[in-house]
Image 1: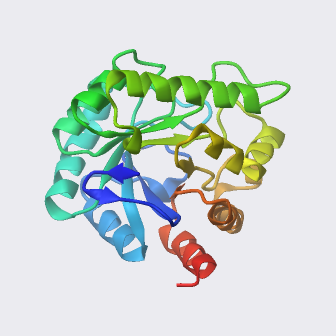
Image 2: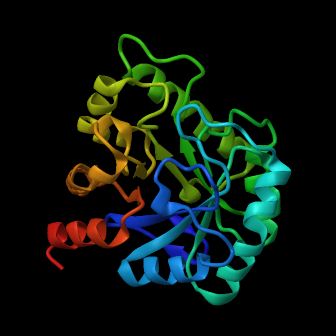
Length: 258
Protein backbone atom coordinates (compact mmCIF):
# COMPACT_ATOMS: atom_id res chain seq x y z
CA UNK A 1 0.00 0.00 0.00
CA UNK A 2 1.39 3.38 -1.04
CA UNK A 3 0.31 6.65 0.58
CA UNK A 4 2.26 9.72 -0.47
CA UNK A 5 5.96 8.87 -0.56
CA UNK A 6 5.62 5.99 1.91
CA UNK A 7 5.05 2.28 1.37
CA UNK A 8 3.20 0.31 4.03
CA UNK A 9 3.31 -3.47 4.32
CA UNK A 10 3.86 -6.40 6.70
CA UNK A 11 2.77 -4.55 9.84
CA UNK A 12 -0.23 -2.86 11.45
CA UNK A 13 0.20 0.90 11.26
CA UNK A 14 -1.60 3.67 13.13
CA UNK A 15 -3.62 6.36 11.40
CA UNK A 16 -4.16 9.23 13.83
CA UNK A 17 -7.55 10.96 13.88
CA UNK A 18 -7.26 14.75 13.97
CA UNK A 19 -10.71 16.34 13.87
CA UNK A 20 -11.18 19.94 12.79
CA UNK A 21 -14.81 19.93 13.82
CA UNK A 22 -16.67 21.42 16.78
CA UNK A 23 -18.98 18.41 17.12
CA UNK A 24 -17.03 15.16 16.74
CA UNK A 25 -18.26 12.62 19.28
CA UNK A 26 -14.91 12.36 21.09
CA UNK A 27 -14.22 15.87 22.35
CA UNK A 28 -10.50 15.28 22.94
CA UNK A 29 -9.97 14.73 19.22
CA UNK A 30 -11.25 18.19 18.24
CA UNK A 31 -8.48 20.52 17.07
CA UNK A 32 -8.14 23.91 15.36
CA UNK A 33 -5.46 25.69 13.37
CA UNK A 34 -4.13 27.01 16.68
CA UNK A 35 -3.24 23.65 18.16
CA UNK A 36 -3.18 21.24 15.22
CA UNK A 37 0.62 21.27 14.82
CA UNK A 38 1.09 20.31 18.44
CA UNK A 39 -1.46 17.51 18.03
CA UNK A 40 0.24 16.19 14.90
CA UNK A 41 3.71 16.40 16.47
CA UNK A 42 2.45 14.47 19.46
CA UNK A 43 0.74 11.87 17.25
CA UNK A 44 3.94 11.32 15.27
CA UNK A 45 5.95 11.00 18.48
CA UNK A 46 3.44 8.49 19.80
CA UNK A 47 3.76 6.32 16.70
CA UNK A 48 1.37 7.57 14.02
CA UNK A 49 2.28 6.68 10.44
CA UNK A 50 -0.51 8.68 8.76
CA UNK A 51 -2.58 11.68 9.84
CA UNK A 52 -6.30 11.62 9.01
CA UNK A 53 -7.87 15.09 9.01
CA UNK A 54 -11.62 15.32 9.43
CA UNK A 55 -13.44 18.55 8.69
CA UNK A 56 -16.94 17.09 9.04
CA UNK A 57 -18.33 14.97 11.83
CA UNK A 58 -19.92 11.68 10.75
CA UNK A 59 -21.15 10.72 14.19
CA UNK A 60 -24.76 9.47 14.45
CA UNK A 61 -27.18 12.35 14.02
CA UNK A 62 -24.56 14.77 12.74
CA UNK A 63 -25.50 17.93 10.85
CA UNK A 64 -23.85 18.01 7.44
CA UNK A 65 -21.76 21.01 6.47
CA UNK A 66 -20.97 21.98 2.89
CA UNK A 67 -17.78 21.30 0.98
CA UNK A 68 -16.96 25.01 1.21
CA UNK A 69 -17.21 24.86 5.00
CA UNK A 70 -15.00 21.77 5.05
CA UNK A 71 -12.40 23.57 2.98
CA UNK A 72 -12.46 26.58 5.32
CA UNK A 73 -11.82 24.22 8.23
CA UNK A 74 -8.95 22.20 6.75
CA UNK A 75 -7.18 24.61 4.38
CA UNK A 76 -4.89 26.33 6.88
CA UNK A 77 -4.20 23.28 9.09
CA UNK A 78 -3.40 21.10 6.08
CA UNK A 79 -0.96 23.67 4.68
CA UNK A 80 0.74 23.95 8.06
CA UNK A 81 1.05 20.19 8.50
CA UNK A 82 2.50 19.60 5.03
CA UNK A 83 5.01 22.43 5.49
CA UNK A 84 6.16 21.17 8.89
CA UNK A 85 6.03 17.38 8.78
CA UNK A 86 7.05 14.59 6.43
CA UNK A 87 4.07 12.34 7.06
CA UNK A 88 1.29 11.26 4.70
CA UNK A 89 -1.99 13.09 5.28
CA UNK A 90 -5.44 11.74 4.55
CA UNK A 91 -8.57 13.87 4.32
CA UNK A 92 -11.83 12.39 5.54
CA UNK A 93 -14.46 13.65 3.09
CA UNK A 94 -17.10 12.42 0.66
CA UNK A 95 -17.20 15.65 -1.39
CA UNK A 96 -15.08 15.75 -4.56
CA UNK A 97 -14.75 19.53 -4.24
CA UNK A 98 -13.16 19.14 -0.80
CA UNK A 99 -11.02 16.27 -2.03
CA UNK A 100 -9.74 18.30 -4.97
CA UNK A 101 -8.87 21.26 -2.75
CA UNK A 102 -7.07 19.03 -0.24
CA UNK A 103 -5.09 17.16 -2.87
CA UNK A 104 -4.05 20.46 -4.46
CA UNK A 105 -2.72 21.48 -1.03
CA UNK A 106 -0.65 18.32 -0.74
CA UNK A 107 -2.93 15.74 0.88
CA UNK A 108 -2.00 12.18 -0.06
CA UNK A 109 -5.18 10.20 0.42
CA UNK A 110 -8.95 10.62 0.50
CA UNK A 111 -10.80 8.67 3.17
CA UNK A 112 -14.38 8.43 1.88
CA UNK A 113 -16.99 7.09 4.31
CA UNK A 114 -19.32 6.58 1.34
CA UNK A 115 -16.82 4.55 -0.65
CA UNK A 116 -16.78 6.84 -3.71
CA UNK A 117 -20.58 6.52 -4.11
CA UNK A 118 -21.82 9.84 -2.67
CA UNK A 119 -20.12 12.05 -5.25
CA UNK A 120 -19.79 10.75 -8.80
CA UNK A 121 -16.62 12.76 -9.42
CA UNK A 122 -14.67 11.47 -6.42
CA UNK A 123 -12.85 8.59 -8.11
CA UNK A 124 -11.76 10.81 -10.99
CA UNK A 125 -10.45 13.46 -8.60
CA UNK A 126 -8.39 10.90 -6.69
CA UNK A 127 -7.01 9.48 -9.94
CA UNK A 128 -6.20 12.91 -11.39
CA UNK A 129 -3.94 13.66 -8.44
CA UNK A 130 -2.43 10.16 -8.38
CA UNK A 131 -3.63 9.92 -4.78
CA UNK A 132 -4.61 7.02 -2.54
CA UNK A 133 -8.16 6.13 -1.54
CA UNK A 134 -9.65 4.56 1.55
CA UNK A 135 -12.95 3.04 0.47
CA UNK A 136 -15.38 2.42 3.32
CA UNK A 137 -18.60 0.44 3.25
CA UNK A 138 -21.75 2.39 4.00
CA UNK A 139 -25.45 2.14 3.21
CA UNK A 140 -28.49 4.39 3.38
CA UNK A 141 -30.49 1.69 5.14
CA UNK A 142 -29.32 -0.53 7.97
CA UNK A 143 -28.14 -3.97 6.94
CA UNK A 144 -30.29 -6.99 7.73
CA UNK A 145 -29.68 -10.69 7.48
CA UNK A 146 -26.30 -11.73 6.09
CA UNK A 147 -23.95 -8.74 6.36
CA UNK A 148 -21.02 -10.13 4.39
CA UNK A 149 -22.49 -10.23 0.90
CA UNK A 150 -23.63 -6.57 0.78
CA UNK A 151 -20.40 -5.35 2.37
CA UNK A 152 -18.19 -7.33 0.01
CA UNK A 153 -20.23 -6.42 -3.06
CA UNK A 154 -20.18 -2.72 -2.16
CA UNK A 155 -16.42 -2.68 -1.55
CA UNK A 156 -15.66 -4.70 -4.70
CA UNK A 157 -17.81 -2.42 -6.85
CA UNK A 158 -16.32 0.75 -5.36
CA UNK A 159 -12.77 -0.56 -5.78
CA UNK A 160 -13.56 -1.30 -9.42
CA UNK A 161 -14.91 2.25 -9.80
CA UNK A 162 -11.57 3.52 -8.53
CA UNK A 163 -9.60 1.29 -10.89
CA UNK A 164 -11.77 2.30 -13.85
CA UNK A 165 -11.07 5.96 -13.07
CA UNK A 166 -7.33 5.30 -13.06
CA UNK A 167 -6.54 4.96 -9.35
CA UNK A 168 -3.47 2.76 -8.82
CA UNK A 169 -4.43 -0.61 -7.30
CA UNK A 170 -1.51 -0.23 -4.86
CA UNK A 171 -3.13 2.96 -3.55
CA UNK A 172 -6.47 1.46 -2.53
CA UNK A 173 -7.36 0.30 0.99
CA UNK A 174 -10.73 -1.01 2.18
CA UNK A 175 -12.66 -0.30 5.39
CA UNK A 176 -15.60 -2.48 6.42
CA UNK A 177 -17.36 0.51 7.97
CA UNK A 178 -17.86 -0.49 11.57
CA UNK A 179 -20.51 1.78 13.08
CA UNK A 180 -22.12 2.64 9.75
CA UNK A 181 -25.47 1.07 8.73
CA UNK A 182 -24.86 -1.74 11.24
CA UNK A 183 -26.19 -2.50 14.71
CA UNK A 184 -24.07 -3.54 17.67
CA UNK A 185 -24.25 -7.25 16.93
CA UNK A 186 -23.39 -6.71 13.27
CA UNK A 187 -20.46 -4.50 14.22
CA UNK A 188 -19.01 -7.26 16.39
CA UNK A 189 -19.69 -9.88 13.71
CA UNK A 190 -17.79 -7.72 11.25
CA UNK A 191 -14.94 -7.09 13.68
CA UNK A 192 -14.54 -10.75 14.59
CA UNK A 193 -14.53 -11.85 10.96
CA UNK A 194 -12.70 -8.85 9.53
CA UNK A 195 -10.04 -10.96 7.81
CA UNK A 196 -12.72 -12.23 5.40
CA UNK A 197 -12.50 -8.89 3.59
CA UNK A 198 -8.90 -9.66 2.65
CA UNK A 199 -10.29 -12.01 -0.01
CA UNK A 200 -11.20 -8.90 -2.03
CA UNK A 201 -7.50 -8.46 -2.76
CA UNK A 202 -6.77 -5.17 -1.01
CA UNK A 203 -5.23 -4.19 2.33
CA UNK A 204 -7.62 -3.35 5.14
CA UNK A 205 -8.19 -0.46 7.53
CA UNK A 206 -10.14 -0.89 10.76
CA UNK A 207 -11.94 1.97 12.48
CA UNK A 208 -13.36 1.11 15.90
CA UNK A 209 -11.87 3.87 18.02
CA UNK A 210 -14.11 4.66 21.02
CA UNK A 211 -17.23 3.76 19.02
CA UNK A 212 -20.63 3.18 20.60
CA UNK A 213 -20.52 -0.57 19.95
CA UNK A 214 -18.36 -0.80 23.09
CA UNK A 215 -21.11 0.74 25.25
CA UNK A 216 -20.86 3.31 28.00
CA UNK A 217 -19.37 6.76 27.66
CA UNK A 218 -16.79 7.47 24.91
CA UNK A 219 -14.28 8.35 27.65
CA UNK A 220 -14.48 4.78 28.93
CA UNK A 221 -13.88 2.93 25.66
CA UNK A 222 -10.09 2.99 25.37
CA UNK A 223 -9.46 -0.54 26.67
CA UNK A 224 -11.95 -2.04 24.20
CA UNK A 225 -10.43 -0.01 21.38
CA UNK A 226 -6.94 -1.28 22.20
CA UNK A 227 -8.27 -4.85 22.35
CA UNK A 228 -9.72 -4.43 18.87
CA UNK A 229 -6.36 -3.10 17.67
CA UNK A 230 -4.65 -6.24 18.98
CA UNK A 231 -7.24 -8.28 17.11
CA UNK A 232 -6.57 -6.27 13.96
CA UNK A 233 -2.86 -7.02 14.23
CA UNK A 234 -3.64 -10.73 14.61
CA UNK A 235 -5.78 -10.59 11.49
CA UNK A 236 -3.14 -8.82 9.40
CA UNK A 237 -5.02 -5.53 9.09
CA UNK A 238 -2.69 -2.88 7.62
CA UNK A 239 -4.07 0.21 9.41
CA UNK A 240 -6.07 1.05 12.50
CA UNK A 241 -7.62 4.52 12.60
CA UNK A 242 -7.59 5.73 16.21
CA UNK A 243 -7.85 8.72 18.52
CA UNK A 244 -5.35 7.40 21.08
CA UNK A 245 -2.14 6.83 19.16
CA UNK A 246 0.23 6.02 21.99
CA UNK A 247 -1.80 3.23 23.59
CA UNK A 248 -2.72 1.58 20.30
CA UNK A 249 0.79 1.83 18.86
CA UNK A 250 2.13 0.19 22.01
CA UNK A 251 -0.32 -2.69 21.69
CA UNK A 252 0.83 -3.22 18.11
CA UNK A 253 4.51 -3.15 19.04
CA UNK A 254 3.87 -5.68 21.79
CA UNK A 255 2.08 -7.96 19.33
CA UNK A 256 4.90 -7.81 16.79
CA UNK A 257 7.52 -8.08 19.52
CA UNK A 258 9.26 -4.78 18.87
